[in-house]
Image 1: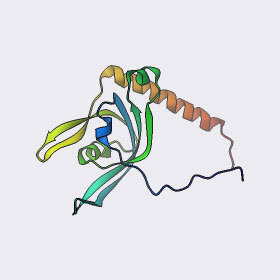
Image 2: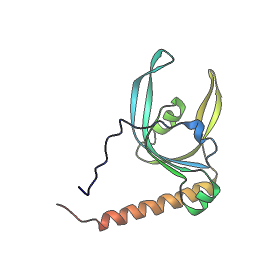
Image 3: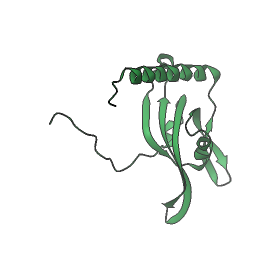
Image 4: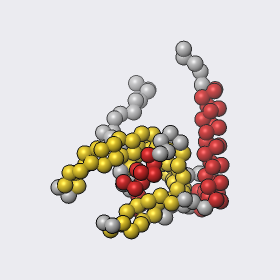
Length: 145
């Protein structure tokens, strides 16, 4: 058999904001939110919101300048409360920011912060070019109707 189907992987991976503290830009495309999901951590069960998203990572100045992401995280689960809160209002539209740690009443947490205007322009150029390429590819695709 020459054709190989993708196999289920058992779920998505989690977005780990601590791994992205030094990235220059994160283009987050939130797809959906699951509200009040049960979650157990250190023996304590509570609920939390979880956002499913694709995240395009620009981790270096070179990646920004060339419009070539350092990573594309497909179908990841964002579960940190303050990050989910920001993303909830952007379901279905692109969201641009960087991750930073901030003090909270309970210690510290992760938040999105804006990028500078130059970085925003570079990521916008990448996004527009990518969307144009997708539109062209779909237009050239055969119809099976």
